[in-house]
Amino acid sequence: MNLKELSDCRVLIVDDVRSNVQLIAEALKGEYKISVALDGESAMKAVAASQPDIVLLDIVMPGLDGYEVLRRLRAEPGTRDLPVMFLSSLEDVADKARGFELGANDYLTKPFEVLEVRARVRSLLKAKAYSDAVRAALERDLSIAREIQFGLLPAELTTCAEGTGLDLHAILEPAQHVGGDLYLALRTAPDRLFLAVGDVSGKGIPASLFMAVTMTLLRSLAREHPKPETVLAHLNQELEAHNRGQLFVTLICAVFDLSSGQVHVANAGHPSPVLLAADGTASTPFGSTGLLAGLFPTAAYTSHAAAFGPGDTLVFYSDGVSEAMDPEANEYGEEKLVSGLLARPRPNAKETADGVLADVKRHAGSAPQSDDTTIVVVRREPV
Image (cartoon, rainbow, N blue to C red; front, side, top):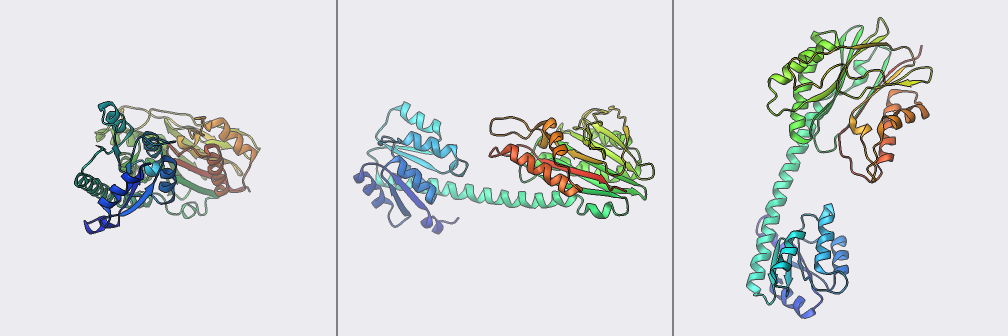
């Protein structure tokens, strides 16, 4: 925003004394668009109807006083950063301190000089313009990073599974623009399919970079080593050797042996997938077989093997599923995941994954998504 564009800014003046409103409005008229509210309730309605660029707020008013108006503004995500300057006759240091503690950007005591009001309003609006520009640039960068990160994920799982008798579907919803969850599916031999699902510690850019490194290493190691425990061991060594940020990844690697009808699973601290057998039973047989990857250079890994017959389904997930919370901070949990899968059997991998996600969102309700959510379903087609 340049200086000319400051004239497009809207200033909301909130004061129950009309003479004060008139004085301030006259001082700012011609420089900005002016809106007026004569009490706290009207101010909140005005902000909700059309958010201003700055609020000039009296403290002592009938009904909602200025402190309560500011508290409510700061409690809402949409107005948390809205510039607010108190214009008040309360000049005690304690009154000013309370205003700043609640989140006021400035505080000017009455009577005030018109030139000072103009200067402070202009200063706050210029600061807001700069902050908005920085935020917009960051949003653009994060959007590009998100596109790059999603570009690392398999674009089409059906192609990977073609001719294997396996039906695959994956969902990944980051909690932020970018995140640390990952999944990978590779056809490493005519009769072998490699699958990995992981969750990097932390969130945001650091987790996304660690995720990208993990994905790159997995693509190479899975083609080189047929056993999932060997893939994990080599991955752990590579990550640990260059891990200055002390991040780590929980990771589960599965190799589907199409000739034997078995699945071999090595697990570095990740939640066990749910095995839905064709006979209608469910289990979580693939617990951790080694330490989380990236921190301990000598960590050792083993694997579990199990039959994966026609009609069987494996549901892999990240802890963004099991630890999803409702507004009362109750977790979704593994038990609810399993019971939901059994209660609503689905005919294919996509419907199974979609059903889990819908159930998690029903549980969360209005609570914000606190972690990345990943669901990967592998179903062996019935004979």
